[in-house]
Length: 193
Ligand SMILES: CC(C)(COP(=O)(O)OP(=O)(O)OC[C@H]1O[C@@H](n2cnc3c(N)ncnc32)[C@H](O)[C@@H]1OP(=O)(O)O)[C@@H](O)C(=O)NCCC(=O)NCCS
Image (cartoon, rainbow, N blue to C red; front, top):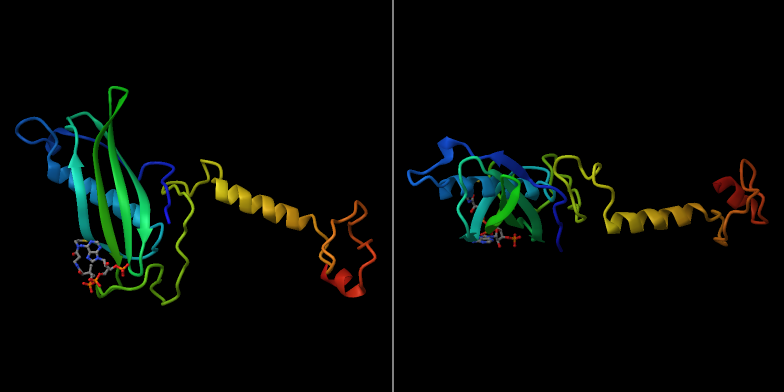
């Protein structure tokens, strides 16, 4: 399963305090931003606390410089029993030019208040929410982006169901369907409507 981000998990302007003596942004600063971006994505699958268990395959392809706008995109690539694996792509906006600089994979484990691992989706009260698998936006919950293909399909199915009469024959509602049920179905179906 995969859930792709519709917008970045994190956007931050790189300041002089992020620089190392040679003028590039510290790798450690970038790692912390990547960690935060991945954890924000993991929250889409798990509503509670997560801890980082692993950061793998971090590749610093190009340097990040002071004044760059750092943009971290984090997709969920795998949901296990207690773990959520994310892939983070980092790019910078440097004077309007978008440059891919880093990518990494980070895995998070869902934990309870004591830091003990728990199944993904378990809330504090013990109830379990099914992980959201559709594409997502951490900032607006998808409202500013329109619907994903899966969501649109589900909506279309719901719409076509609502056009059907609720009687057992599942025929389409006639134009006369309104306050009174005009089809020749049983009284039972009338009550349902
Ligand atoms: C994360 C932690 C709770 C895991 O506890 P644990 O009892 O050792 O758990 P397990 O070894 O059974 O692993 C739990 C899950 O993580 C996954 N995992 C463990 N090590 C992993 C690794 N190196 N890479 C990827 N996934 C890993 C396991 O596959 C398992 O996933 P699943 O349940 O979906 O199959 C524990 O190791 C811990 O507290 N670590 C410190 C976390 C921390 O302080 N992070 C930094 C600050 S947030």
